[in-house]
Length: 213
Image (cartoon, rainbow, N blue to C red):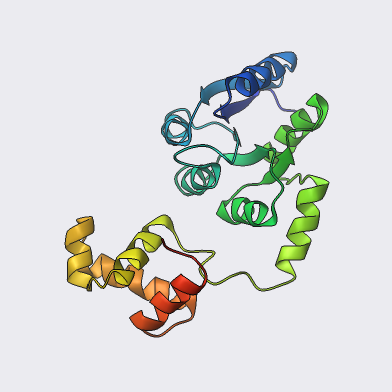
């Protein structure tokens, strides 16, 4: 079926020059429409919730709320938005984290204009595009078991940090201003994801794998 409406794209990148260059790229293609841009992760999440783009193009390494957190939040709250990670970094943990968080594609910033445009079109159709370096990393990482705790949510990491401080469920609930039943669910999820059976084991695993500071 022929697409009649342009693909609505939003950009999150903390570098002004990069955002301006990407905006110019959007203007070069009739089927791509820039509907929003943000210079940091926090504003990016907020703006994405407001404009609900078809495709989010986000950097990964940004001060404050990083790109992986942006991807995770947008993937959860804007399920119809496809996400393309565009970054200078090809470290395997970053590739894995971005894709696990919900990114459809992972590209390096050395892509050509046409390659990026095609990746945005493919993402809109739900088809992934991976930089060769990222594809190699993904094959390498998925060939071995992920590190314990890789899939902990931000809130679960908060709870784990408080467990490490020695807080019980009631104290954690009061500290985070959430219900005890919610804390109990978080603790249960933490135990399951870390493959442990008690708080002491959870803390030991957290320290061993540097899951909390």
